[in-house]
Length: 405
Image (tube, rainbow, N blue to C red):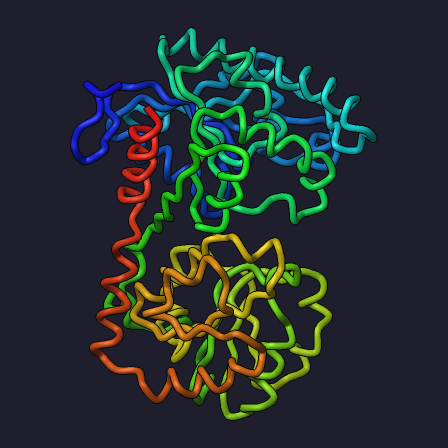
């Protein structure tokens, strides 16, 4: 390995198989895809979509993406698709069973092992077609369908990537409390995008490393967006904004309500899809709160440019405490002042973000941010955000591999 690792921790000339929860044809941002693209700059990469399971087929049988997978399974479409130089996408030619409902870890383990065997067999066929030999297996948080792949595929090196504390979600918690620690322990290396998650992995595997996070920040440059979005026309006063999924499991509705009611002269703009609790919340009755709905990623910087202060009013729970706040980098790349809930992951941003320790802090800190903002602070925020590239994050992954070896 040393002869393929230069002084800058750049892994070269290897074959890498990437699996995870998000398929290549996902419509939202994906750490896994960004990492795979960075890998492919100096290695060959096979990016494997999660196999189709029966309950997903039943619920979405008319979806074009599901039909594509069915065509691969029945042999009427090729499942191995070139993406760009050095990277291929695999649609597995198998269907797995939906097993999370099974009671008892023993029965689940038997069924999961069978699913893993089918999944591994599909991957092996692609490995043979591509001529992959001595390869690395990179698993992005897929604790179930990836649990036995190290055993079945026999990679040169296995890496588990932790980017969210999945056990805070009921679906993953049910069997994950037993199986994720075991998967972390049997992986050769674990890497995580937050200090909290690196500490979590280190409980089960000493070869666990914090590798930070990359962001696609090329879009987020203030000068590229001279014209404001039409749906913000007529909104006056200091604009306090949030961009991202409006999910009540992650965001504190009460914080947003307090900002809007205590400062009626401010306009609160929320850009993103809403869950049911947001849709039925009192926020929709407040005249100074504006919902834009979901917007294409390429248009988000134009919205952020119109914000005087950006917010990330997270709840403090196990879902949020360990996740890397990617949107913070996007806000800072636009030079914007940011007020966010203080979490373990936010400690790295403390010199550039106003951190709220309570709900009561938000209005006070937004007032402070509005008063203190200037061109020089905006420049420093952007410079800090631009350090968080996928190149740097993947370089840290390579460094973790080197340290392990």
